[in-house]
Picture 1 (cartoon, rainbow, N blue to C red):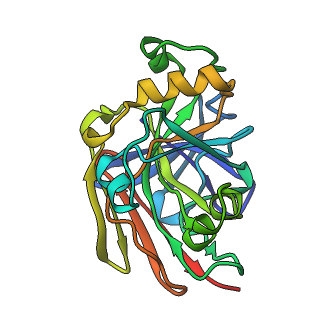
Picture 2 (picture 1 turned 30 degrees about the horizontal axis):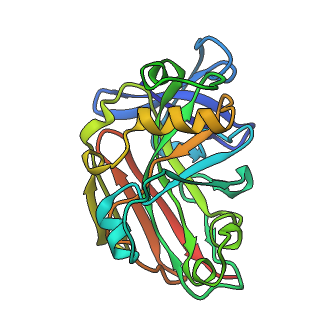
Length: 258
């Protein structure tokens, strides 16, 4: 099931994206699927006629994982850390499909990072890996944009990772997905940058979410970004970045400087 958040010009609402007679349609549902039972409203709109929004706005945080693909760790000049590397993005970093990524004025080197994002559906604390699946609503595409020059300049990554619009997600949440071996890629203006597979993750989704839950309580709507494959590159103002994950779809965002 694909759960989208969208608008037709009125207040945002949620819907289920399904194909009917060869056309993708959005079937409106009541409330927020994180908290309420999914019930149809009777609203049915062609997907091409809606504006997709970020499928979830995290209640509190985005927890990101660094160097979870060995090849990416190597291209960054290091190895996979013995202990999983975690950092945070605030919920103000989250934007949706088509929203502009605004390059911070203190950076001349913003890089893309294609990532599989996990959407938490239930409060999670001190989980075992076996319990994780019962606390996950589904998965979406994410772009962990990074001000690489700021990252090199400081030990802390706040300026590098937390700037507004640095975490596009979408186009929707896929709830029925075997995420163990999915093609994941990024492209800039149609030119491929990254090509990898979630099978290359050093630590699995279940391992990551369980370990994160031993550190912080994960709340409904929180996101866990699971790392990026090799091939990260800078993105110039005026370009468009596509993040594609098999079984989910493509997330596209323009890069701008103001």
